Amino acid sequence: MTKTLHHRACHLCEAICGLNIEVSHEPNGHAVIGSIKGDPLDPFSRGHICPKAVALQDIQNDPDRLRQPHRRIGEQWQAISWEEAFSLAAERLWAVQQAHGRNAVAVYQGNPSVHNYGLMTHSNYFLGLLKTRNRFSATSVDQLPQHLISHLMYGHGLLLPIPDIDHTQFMLILGGNPLASNGSIMTVPDVEKRLKALRARGGRLV
Ligand code: SF4
Image 1 (cartoon, rainbow, N blue to C red):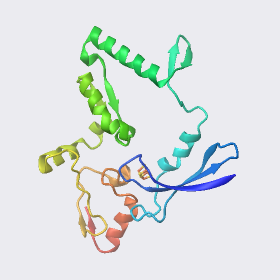
Image 2: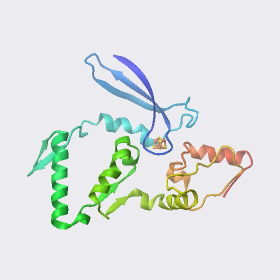
Image 3: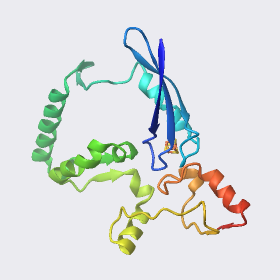
């Protein structure tokens, strides 16, 4: 068995912590993740990760993980191809909207869809075609005020300022708790240590 080490960034939140992923390769070609640890050489996250990144290997290696679409037929689940799944979804979504109106279809998006290139680049086209007003996401209970402020101040909801937490001497936080959010949308990994460092150099955190 051989082992390889892969340096990646965690895509689960905006803190983008650096990861060291050790993969074991069996002689039959099967590859299994052996461990996921923080990368101490990542200049940004400096070895920090949270439990979500460690648990990625459990998702990857889970024997019950769905690896292709399934269709429920009665009490049974039948594996189908992606082509069949896309066709079926398009056919049924169209039928529901034809019968009950555009708003009969609701959409929910969460963090995984924001950190996925395919969904980032294509989901808006899809949502534009659906034309439903029923769009839900974690954003509305999370960071929507921040998007509004960015829109009003900088002209775009995604122009989110990144606080220079490593050099400021005074940090004022309104309506947020970086310890709860793990410094997520601030793009500040290991926020707890950075806030302690701010105080240790005589800075103020309000
Ligand atoms: S803080 Fe965010 S980027 Fe860092 S390990 Fe956790 S989920 Fe991943």
